[in-house]
Image (cartoon, each protein chain N blue to C red):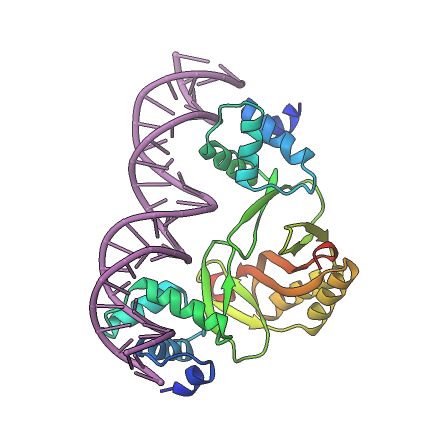
Length: 135
Length: 135
DNA sequence: GTCCGTGCAAAGGATTTGCATAATC
DNA sequence: GATTATGCAAATCCTTTGCACGGAC
C-alpha cells in the first residue's frame, strides 16, 4: 500500500503498520484515537493487541508520520503529519473536529515566546464548542 | 482564613478546603497539581486522602473557584479563577509557567468559531518551550 | 438530626512494559 | 541469523467511586 512512507522513515514494514497507516489516510476527518484504530483492525480480522496500536502510533509520532493531539477530556487522537500546521475546533457534543489555521495567531504566539525569552518548541490550541448541528 | 470564598460558593467550610484554598493562594506560581496539594496537606500533618483532594478541586472548579488546565504530558494543574483570563507558556525543562493574555488571539478565536458556526464554550492555548534559564 | 464531606480501599480507564514468540530484513 | 515487532497479560499512572464514619449547619 504505502511501503514508501515506512521505508522512508526507516521502519520495518508490517501488516499492522500498513493497515494503521491506511486507516489514518482513509478516516473521515483524519483523526483517530488508539481505540478507534484498534477496533478497525479487529474489524479487518487482524489479530492485534492494543499495545501494538500504541507502540505503532508512538513510533509513527517519533519519526514524524503522525501528530498526537491531546484534548482536555484526556482523550488523544492522532492525525497524519503530512498536512500543513493547523489547530483544532472540537464539538463537545458530537466530537466533530474542524481544522483551521490563523497566521495572526501563529505570529502572536511567536511574539509572546520571544517576549518571555522562551525558545518555542510546540504549542497546542484547541477551541471547544458546540457545532451548528448540535445546537 | 477565607471562609467567605467558600460561603459565597455555597460550600461547607472544612479544614481541608480552607487549607487547599490557602495553598492555592500562597503557591509561588499559583498552579498546583492534585499531588502537590496532597503533599502540602500531608506536610501540615493533616490526615487527608488523595480522593479528597480530587473531590475538593473538582468541587472548586464546579463553583468557579479554580480553573483546571491540562497540559500535553497528561498533567493537570489548578489555579485560582479570580484573575482575568489568560493562557500559559510552559517550560518543558523546569516546568516554569508564565501567564499571558493576547487580545488579538482571543478575538481571532471568536472569529474562527463564528466562521465555522460553533458556539464557543472554552479554549485551551498552551505554548511549550524552553525558558531563558534552561537554555 | 440531616446532609454533606471525608478516609480508606477498591475500581476504573488509558497507556506502558516484560517476556516469549514471530516476523522482517 | 540478527534485530525489531507483536501479542498477551500484568503493571502503572492518574483519577474516580462505594461505603461507612465524622463533621458542619
